[in-house]
Image 1 (tube, helix red, strand yellow):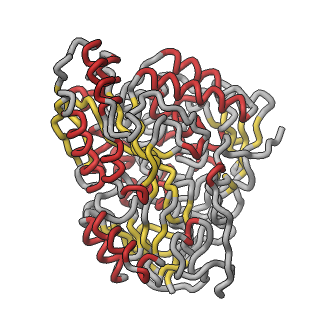
Image 2 (cartoon, rainbow, N blue to C red):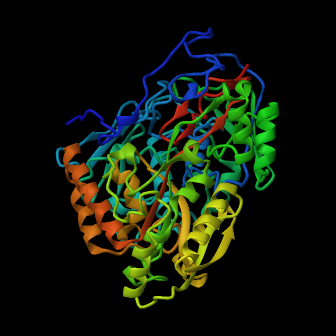
Image 3 (cartoon, rainbow, N blue to C red):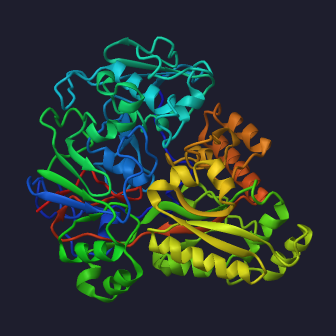
Length: 579
């Protein structure tokens, strides 16, 4: 059967009306002189080609290999040189619940009646940047390397590893170079990719937006080649990597073998794209305001000083956008480091969410969250741990929980945060001060963003550094309850490297619910189960929901085709050009 793809559960409740006003160029869009215009429309619509587009960021990529990355900004940016089977709709602005559309594939997947086999056909006649043809086997190899070589590539999601029919001890493509033993995908011809699943999975189309850009096996030879492939990635998108010096600069230039028909969701406008990592946030803000850079690649918004200046200066404010980013800022409480649920509940009650909100910019930075599922994915809208009428904390409830956990005077743990993210650092200080009010002492533990997969993502590291509380942010891998909850809360998602269930949620009831939901075809039925999962996790007190994020983003006047891609919660990097 062929299904009509539906993305959200009941998520469009906050969607703004789509506003499109003509301003010249090949398509319509609004001009640059309206605050928050890019949240609902295209700003500075233009087909003009040429120029050098500059991105900056306060950290570096976790990896520029699309098969070995998990940050939203990485997945957004790598679409410039890596074309997945399916992707988020990039040509229709204002979709707060983004539609998934074909990219390398000719259509959405065709599932079997029992949802255990999914078939995709890829576009014919396409070439890599090296001139070699793109075939179905290149997609099969890409999935094999990204999910079945954890000793080499361990930073990305593992949905395929979990759901594809494959031996548990499959050694991976570096030990099985011809993929003779890789049974999870078959390629009956050069343009057909068939995924074989262990169990029904109704949302499989959502998974193939990740880790399916084709990779030619002969360009990725052996474990050493695999780990270094990001430095010479063979492009299937509009740009190709000319050079990448980690920590210093990456340069992308036009892929001469790319065609618009080959990846219809992308544009090829700028002659060159330069990425500068490890730039201080204050410098990034200054460069955006003076036009020497066009995009803060992280997409999480300007610093507090720049925010105040932009909002108080009308000529600057008209170049700013404040969309719902799709992120939720939260803290994980590790159940191994803090095993007593009452101790964890004490933390939940004691946190002052208003000071955390202030760290992220006040109301401009987002609303206070009360449960883990965000409002754009049919949130429970419950409040398991009320923090008092003013959200500054319920200290009496916290002290009561401390008494029940046998530590009435409090206890000591470590609080992890990304040291190159000023707003997250300020949030850590705010949490530290709030918890100290009831005797919970925290040692601040900062680390660089690109090390998250090996610091928080390795349980051994979490245990060694006694990281009881870990600040982070999360955006749905795809905009459904499964896409938001699986990697962060399912016990089955815990891995020894590249783990995103930081809190080590191990409740078997959560696993049972995840195993149930994947076979349900009806969206309302799945929504009900996702709310049960959210309730179970909150009762375990392993997640502290903090802020439903908004991001004040600045767009220089010379940036064209600007609109928010709600699949990633930032500007759509596949569309941008220059005047």
